[in-house]
Image (cartoon, rainbow, N blue to C red; front, top):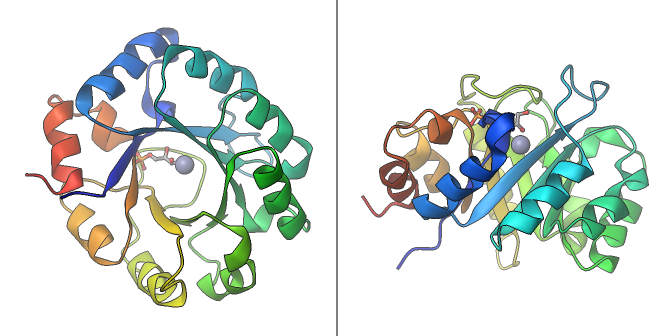
Length: 216
Ligand code: DX5
Ligand code: ZN
């Protein structure tokens, strides 16, 4: 029995070989693909947009988990839905129209996620619990892969797990998760784990994914 979902982030992949990266993700046993969308405004980095999500969609049936690190996400959620996103996660800090945007995501047939940065209080999520299918707790400052996991975010994960008890909301950790801290992350209640560098730098991806899933 195993219900941990692993979501490798293609931000850590070689963008000249996305097809190869998608095959590696499929072969590893990971169930989702995490797409980190960055606009250079909400975060100090630019990654890719809806076209990348649409192109990846053509390559795989895996769940596409789109993490929007952009200002005014309400302007773009429909585009990402049309391009095949399954989950669309917006940041609490990125817009004043949170409830409206979460509802819009669901109206386009996608699952809605809410993300918070490491310094944002998890209690802000309380008023949106009816509107979300997933809560993403960032364990690094959004913007770059390969950063160190902030251990203090484990407490927020535990708090959210309590807050959302009895509800059907997935808790996702994102940033700096690796083979050494994944047990603590799962112990704090996360059932969806994003892995950027831990996946793409691994020489045995199947083993890494099995370890994340708790099979090893
Ligand atoms: C950071 C992104 C993360 C990141 C994960 O802004 O949201 O998804 O790419 O990469 P690692 O696992 O290397 O921290
Ligand atoms: Zn992410």
